[in-house]
Image (cartoon, rainbow, N blue to C red; front, side):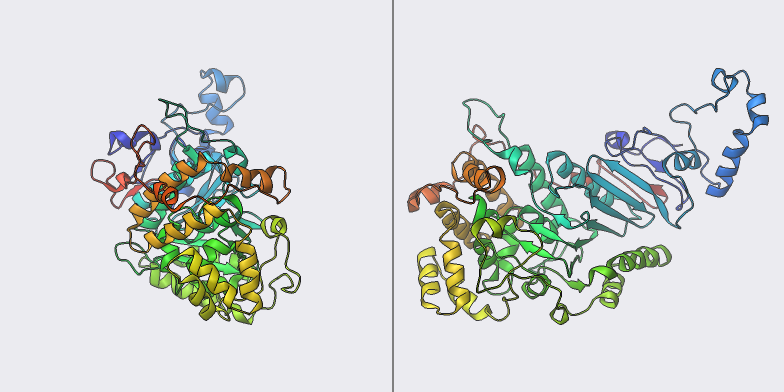
Length: 516
């Protein structure tokens, strides 16, 4: 094998001049324990290498190598690190190495599972509770960096596990976190730091991403499912896709229930949805089904859940056989398997005449609000398009329909601080860049962590589960404005938002080089 092109990237494991159907292993942090191997014989096919490996493991080969202490003891000598051939590495990681054309293998790290195909990656968040922690967010960011750097990766698919896409952050680990300590940077919010960096990498990635929103997508999970969509039509980024299904349950619930605000750059993309729908979703805690997700522009396609696997298989197969497979071809495949969400009657919605409790609206499984965005779009714009919170609430009071009265009652249950902060955040985000929006959210998160409402929200909905948070009183206008002021490094270290992995000196990948 040849030496890595960049000394800084050597620990992540390179395979140079390898056959395109050969296995490529992940970086040391993503590897499954096989280490950082360089390629073996680079011109032989997998079949030839497997045959050679079998010959070396035959009794005749064992007798010829009887001097080897391991072989002499009756075993098969294990090659030293750095000497394994591609086929040997493949046979160690897969029971049936040739089971699928173009399938390179699976890399598992923590709760992140990456299915590596020759032309794409399928990233699964394997978590029984469907929440993400600091480590998982770091793994996902690394997958994005690696995929961006690979010339042969055409797209990446993000999926959840079983009944969920992602139900947000590990909030219990954040409860009680964030109280300032003089002269110390101990509370630098590593989970949110990884979350913001991940959302930035996804939004700015030059590679196409597909999010399969099959199941529950709540809080930060909802933001991660949609932060890659170019809702403002900006150039320089790839065309991306999100797929809603019959099982989609979608909600930006951090503001409404947890005394916070929508994360992951949501202050950038929510104000850019049609009309004032973004502000409504941020404040109301509404649970959307696929029809409403599609209407809001938060998904590009709707697909019945039983079609998803066939669609994913078709994407991988087409990418394998089409050297020009790109966003236009991806859209063609998704259009083939997609259908109209409004024609589906499988959504499970609560009875609007018997709205659920505050706690049930947060923790209930697999139900949504009745389909309502299109029918109430004009009223949403009239109420949530106002210039301040007071006018918004007054407009809701003037609307006599059941939707407006239920929405008003729901908003009055949320943290007053969160209500005013979120409204101001989205108002500012409408005219800011993505980077500025994320940095503003970073500062706000630090300041709100030092206050009571976030911790009280986590207590009421995640720990004690009584659904009765005791919010702080409404702060003054000056106090709200002060939360948005810049912070010095003594208060909060700056958030690094870069794409160093694409810069000269950090990576340089051309055809013939394979890196997982």
